[in-house]
Image (cartoon, rainbow, N blue to C red; front, side):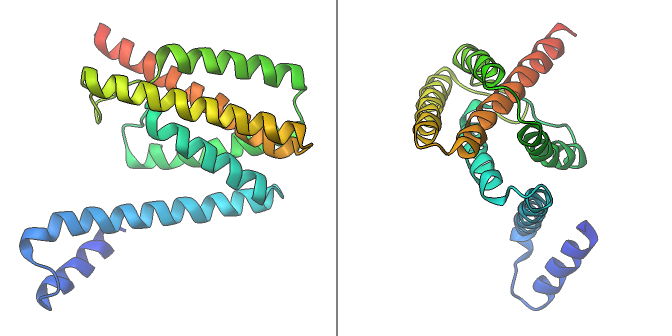
Length: 191
């Protein structure tokens, strides 16, 4: 894919559409666009295979909103990132299919809220946080977290259990990313 993007950009430079100064930025932008587009298409395919398109979109939306502020685990390579990102939807779909008892979901949700409340945001090599940024992201994490819990509870009372579970699973999986990032950061600092 990188060769194709490079050829497009070189063609753009040759035709005076792109300047040499913007070459790296354009390459990065096109690569990100293709990465996000392929991610979304694959997510939709996964959700359709498991017959949970609406619930899957709710899950992914809740996860992305939360993930934006919590930080946590980030893969070291693009391929690993792609595999892990797409695996999270498979984890959601399988958890949704096996219909985990409500008591276990609530227990996992409580644990997830504690993990997120205590550890998030977790910085990584790509995103170091100043004290001011940490406080800002902590506040935003808590705001999104409690908003999502409220949304999940409302859907529970409206008897939309699948939508409720989609939101709650997003929080639980988000906590897993935070815990993974926290552990990775601590082991890296020990070396």
